[in-house]
Image (cartoon, rainbow, N blue to C red; front, side):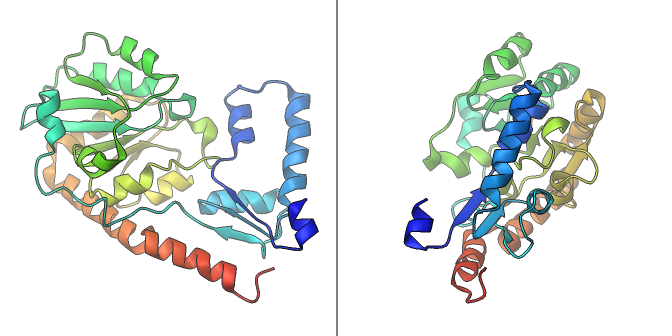
Length: 283
């Protein structure tokens, strides 16, 4: 209403397609309500001058919803590659948690909600519990943290920490030898984990769950390993492969850092955003 009154242009940015995700996860089960909200969503989307989202698949979904191609714009999450850099020493979190120097740290950091499929990580931790080589660190908050703690009870190779101060971000991400990024198949291409950019910038390999052909799987080509969602055995085997192969971890992590610098740095993403705003041919 404000834009119509002032005749200004309108830009809507979509971080998550929350309605689709909630419906697929069964959080909204009333089919009539979903149908009505979907129509409202499309009505709103079509009335913006520009509509952007954070991945190509999500941009494609905007077009499927009826937003004209000339209006859509891909605006990925960016990362400050000066603040988040490969740590060239041992993170102080290792000493804080009492993790042996020769252990491989598999880190999950971020929201612990329903979209992540975190129950997989508890099953994997149990599966590899006899391997003293791997220590799991789960950091963050959310509705699933209690469930995860319960399932990991008694596992000496699992450590929990609450959400960490942003000032310690590089130290925290540098704790990882391997970043863990589970995601349930039901929200594929409706969301894109915002934590991905920091993982890539940290120069550490990523082990994720994703279906072939999804945006997350495409983003991790040469930067990590992807296994099918919910497959405990495949994820465990991939984790042990990475844990035992330092050169593979180094190679994948280096490629992730290059990707962050070339495509996802704050300067490049925001320069593209500014250019789109200022271009005279903006619809």
